Length: 541
Image 1 (cartoon, helix red, strand yellow):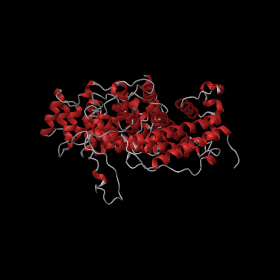
Image 2 (cartoon, rainbow, N blue to C red; image 1 turned 90 degrees about the vertical axis):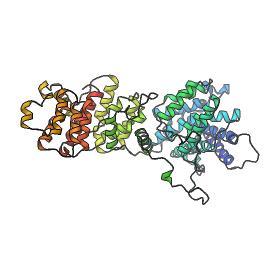
Image 3 (cartoon, helix red, strand yellow; image 1 turned 135 degrees about the vertical axis):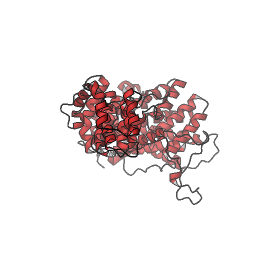
Image 4 (cartoon, rainbow, N blue to C red; image 1 turned 90 degrees about the horizontal axis):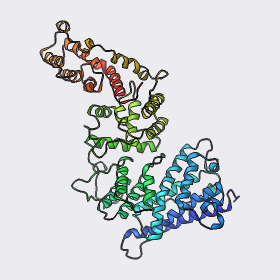
């Protein structure tokens, strides 16, 4: 075979591949003696997997920068090698910046965005692998078989990505894939959560948390804060604050919501064995409870959207649920709690994308954006979503990004060149609201009521509005709930509609959408809802 790589690169690749294969053999071997802890069997195995990851990354760096890249301060004579985490971080930086020194890795130099994203994902996991490796080789501390399989899968995925390179492919051919995971990721995380709750010391809790992060199917390209937290506790004793932060981040920032087991914390992790005749026959749809509460539905939409985005597809929340959230408010809906007062970008983006992907007027979403404290990350998610989004989302993305940047920087956004009329009309609608006279806000004069004599029921509602007992939104909502309306009653409803121009009157607009009496004015109500949401929660314009 012709030689495509440097000698040192080939040696490192061979070492990485052999470490990977030895670990696979170790997993396949039966346990020949009783162990105090079953996880101990995986200690040398994860040590080998960690070594494989480090050697494969070093091979790439040595090919790019020379053999000195794997020595401390580049000093070959010292014989002191760099830490695996340092090497991985260097590789991550070169890949992220698309440095010319690693251009040989790209399968297609002109179109390698997907390969780059997936390599960054693997490198993010490899930093966690290095701590598993150290625990395994230096302290005899293993992990569960499930986590070992997840680690093996990460390394195999990395090898497959490197194999797209014409130079690397000949040295990485015909390698076996690890066995498939026996348990679903959610079940594994639920099991680890149960152990985390019962763990007594911080070191054990750190290892269990690390296992949860390794099992996660997706790590954002934007470096999350928890990476630094793991780096810190790797060199100093973990505090309760570190553990609380990492546990909270795992739950909130990664769309992994851990459902509590019915009847207590000690649930039984489940294994799916469809072809095992002795397995308990439970229909898959009955394994989880029905998602009946708003927070459950909210979290389920987040999980689905982020999973599909990782597959370069969009699966967004439905319009009706977005309107439900707007009607209730995030506090009343139970989405925001005393412990979690803000949303992450990963929680917010599916609803923003859904709002701007609709036919006609965009749906309200700034009430959600205003509760997100990661606007830069939200912008990155929206740019990513636009790539696989529909035509409505693609057309509106420039205005959305400009609005998000203005919101973050507390500046004004201009919609003069906007392609979508919903944005072009915003300044006009705002001016119209600001210039609304006192007479326009009090339309039910004696002359009006003599001309459009209301029914007795509606007359009482108008009385409440005129005296200030009810606002326009509440009055319109109550009126539209009636089974039948006379022509005069309908005229009164249409007179109330323009007065529902802010968030305090939104229930009137929602009633237009969900009742039968003003069906021809649904688009008007949608536009007013969009304007009210943007004015109240969005940037200045």
